[in-house]
Amino acid sequence: MKTNNILGGVVVALLIAIGIALMWRTGRWPFEWPFDWPFGQRPAAVATAPTDAPPMPAPPAPAPAASEPAIQYPVAAASEPLPAGDAPMVALLRGVFGTQGAQRWRLDELPRRIVATVDNLGRTTATSRLWPLDPAPGRYTVDAPGTPQAAHISPDNGLRYTPYVLMLESVDAKTLAAAYARLYPQLQQAYAELGFPNRYFNDRVVQVIDLLLATPEPTGPIGVHLPTIEGPVRPTRPWVLYEFDDPKLAALPAGQKLLIRMGPVNERRVKAKLAELRRELVAAAPAR
Image (cartoon, rainbow, N blue to C red; front, side, top):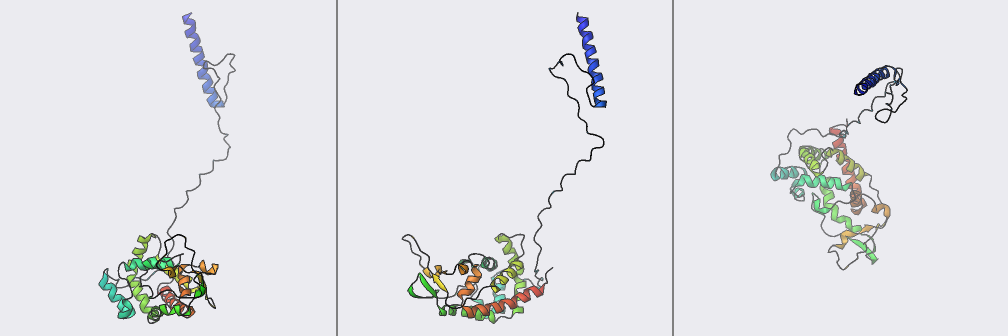
């Protein structure tokens, strides 16, 4: 009895080996078993792909890595970049703006102040805390025939900005562009530290100049109002909170709002000088 079991096991093993070999060559199991497979199920046929099947498509190529934005307005390298320190900075400012004009600049972290202010002029707000120049003296003046909540900008308000406009007009655009090129390595470094390591600062300068040149020139009185302030705490300088009545003016970037507050005469004079400076910045190194 034991011998028969062994013999039967050998026969079954032999049949399984033959079946596997035939299945490998033909793709189907050759036997129809009259009894259950010892493990409870029949072996499944091995699926083989037809020899004339089209090739599998190649996997998609990986997306290329995002490249850095191309430089539009490269600044020609200055033959003598400005050394770090207050003394070289003061000498540079005096050479461009004169002794009195140089005194209006804030030397502490001046490159950082310049890049932050230029960038912010194209955004919603440009806090005076970061300005590279001392703010205009005096206070924002309005004519309020009834209430501060319904007023318009006083024509005399532009007088506060006249010294700065005169200082800008006194500067030769080529001289200013040359000084800018000497200072540019420090400006680019400050721009990277500001949070733009892959951007070129001069491209932003030209972009903001174009934005300022597109500032609208309203005619007639410009209505302004103080926002409603809830709570017992009142601001110590409420005049800095005036907003334009016109929603379109209120939605303008900070730099355009500043030009409008200067008054129409100052706005046109500043635009004329900015256009000169833009030509120098672009002509010094053509776009590539």
